[in-house]
Image (tube, rainbow, N blue to C red):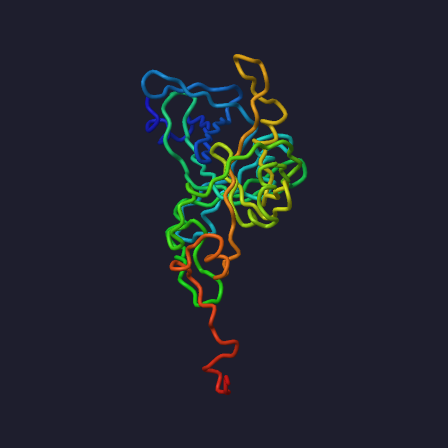
Length: 286
């Protein structure tokens, strides 16, 4: 008996679902089955799917993007779902749902694919809002804008700066919510890292504030807090290994900053000499 045979039957199907979340190099796997499930992988390895009280709404095939959204329901206490109650990071979290039947364990098909776009609390449940992967096909691309400030994303293609040359390694000594203490940040003037990037393992955080040795991120980085709470030990000395992160400076998108801080004025994407009055408004601009 095969998956296709059971799927086409009128009453024999007993479906279960596998949920795979991917964020950069990190992968989380859950199953709707009552117990953990182990499936075969390449080269004889196995993959473990953690049992969780998770469910999702109906999958609708439609040409309307908004109707192609999917909602996942989790218990309020589940730690994985709670991480999405904080603002989402820069790395998208993709979701692939596999569907199988209890009669043919091990044979599954890809049922739905998309990404997590938000979360909300409803009573004792957390609702993860996901949108289909096809929604990206209809999004309008970003267009160049005529503006005083630079239109390029820092370290992006238009900017041309290689972030690899701007990383500064620092030791995280404290973390409270989205506020981190990194002594090395105090070696630069206040605001130097505002608008920049913090890298910890595969995680990236956007720096929204910098005062002295304190950096404020757009969202908490739970991985940093966990590393500080339970630091790894040096196998030779037994001493705790410092929690290290890389930080790169930010930019306020002004021409003077581009020239003085990065020496990158030839790639500046703004037009600082735009007149303050509209030359096409019908009135004199002199």
